[in-house]
Image 1 (cartoon, helix red, strand yellow):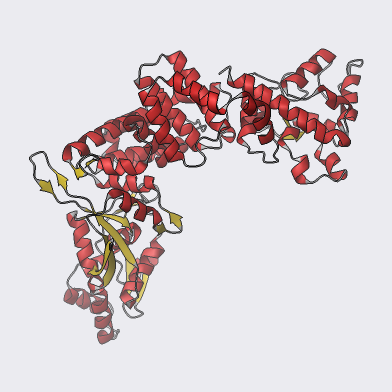
Image 2: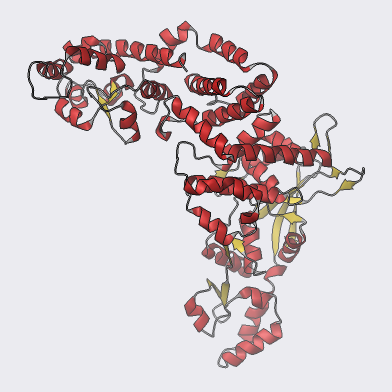
Length: 594
């Protein structure tokens, strides 16, 4: 079955469709990201008669209205937004929204004698041999423009200039390829086609498609909803962007959504800086009990999954539910309380969180349990536990959408504590803690999620850094403290061990730099001898620990086997094996305390 048709369309026809709303520019990449020189180059290519590629559109399915009649679907531009926006800016003189969300005009100048295009600048404005803005020329009177030009430049070759002007005026008559996806394609197929399209080398995602669908629907407030999502994500990273919105988007700054997100103007928390994919995923899954974003596009298009028709009532109810989900996501109380729960599990820094989808589903769970009326104490425990469970089992690392879909359906149909117990019984048995987890700690990858869980367990327990008397592991993590080696790296290198050996995470501890300097490249038995000397002297040779009891306590909280005090390189493998088991045991106790 042919899934598309290919036609050449006049640029003026394409622009007329944009102006009339026949084609909706959904802002897939949202703000216009081309720089002005690319717009200039596009105009030059059209002038020279060079091909400028294709744009791809798909006509929305026809939707059954409440009175039983059908409305024709608009064409949605799913690839080629930047080129079409560039055409509307350069040829029609329309404003574009730039990377900082400001409304600007891109003015392209033309030199008829040299047949050259350039981005308008102050020098060009002072040079009468240039047409400063081709949009004024293309949409003006050719005879009048030529006469004005000849009056300012009487010495030019009038025939040559007239030919150049004529070619300029004919740019809208040039053709551009339009690939139109078949209107009877189901949304799943369109989604698949959409995802396979490359734009600037970046594969577009289902979230991009959902965003395009939302932004194109002005009748149901999708354009405002899109801005709310976009602005929230921007403010979460750059709170000072708030003034930009107030100054440059007066309409949005008067909306209820703006009131709901303006708390971010004073927020500098960076533990969870969501992008628009995260917001869409959490809002959709928490409200629709579905995990696959292709279903969101279907529902916002009005799809009735049983009859396979498209209905206006479903569009309206879907937008209302999705809007409610976005409001729940951006709610200040929800967002801050959720982050408080994550931090209370020991995950106090973004560098301890490797998977955004783990955070996303934990937030979904928080919103869902709150909607179900679960009491706040249980919510905190459940969210903490599921968050850590998801990391330990790598639950959302393979096919996250399928896992999201399965989990949300389970959570929606049965008590959460039952589902959690089932998952723990199946995946966190004694075999996991005693064998599987220690094996997973056999790695030199410092970003290992298992190592992050171990560090979180130390943070939650208020453990002190290795050989520290007062400084906490949490402080060392928060203040960009360094990870150091229990068996010093230089010592192991000098004894012939390679990077994969001396950088084993079971050889890592958070240690104050000044203590690490005193440890130097000595084997453990030597630097521990110095520590023990402190018990009998007043001078601190390595750390502030002055009694054996405090030393043993510090080793215990850092999961360092006591045998290390007499070890050298020949016993390094034995040390790693024992410490992995101690780390796994600490993580088990931590997990079941959540």
